[in-house]
Image 1 (cartoon, rainbow, N blue to C red):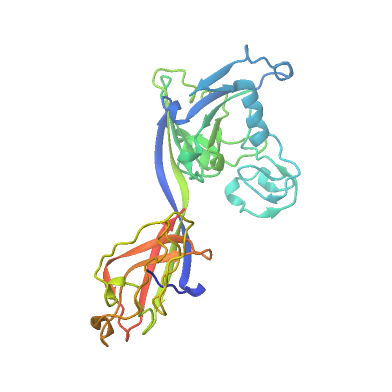
Image 2: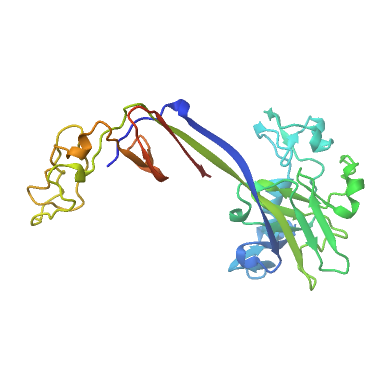
Length: 356
């Protein structure tokens, strides 16, 4: 049986830190939910008279993705002008229309709060065709870590290696020096060949030239994607203090006079759950039995054996449980060995564990 006391708020510390894990997928991993889908703009007639039976599509693990509607979905989510949005200026999704951020490299603009109309950066241009790469949320966690993406395509005679710049843009590492020195403008967007939307696990290859075959799975060797996932871990630390001469009582029944260490209950009767019997302070038993007990129950004695009445007798602490305000057990810390609860000493136990 346990004894309980409240933990002072100043003895509770919750801190967070970010952890990352590296994943690598290739074009044969569609069974895990990782896949690429061609995007086609189509025409108004394609949308107004959409025919499932004849529409071009791709199927992965029993799910069908139609190229034209998926294009419209990606366009609406990430590429059309974002208007009348209130909240943070997001350099990945949009910047204020009247701001120089539209024509300035994103690293120069910090995240701020705005109520102004937002407009997409010039580094995001969606043409009539593109390729979508989707990463399942169970792999990227809270988001793909910016700056961790490496997309390698061996489908053609030339190998392309694309990386992200941590600001939602994909570029060819073969041109990394020239890309780093260029500032995207309305007429020139550097060497951007695609975009990354980290929080959604979405990568879009927007280039319609040499890179239009990247991740299309047209060649014999296919492609691979390497990235780091992001997850926030919360370290919880609870300092449990046992003061001098505190928690010195015991509920160990074997310390009672006449208690042999085992006993046999009488005949059980069918009735509703009965509250267990209790003796006097401080040896209370609380709660209910898990089955119907006989009418007499087990009435504990109140007299301790001689060893337990000695002035040097002390209890031992073996476990520490953490409860919420509803008296529900949330966590248990087990000590490597029992710790004597000396009457003249104050003890401090630190219970520390991680959650996400």
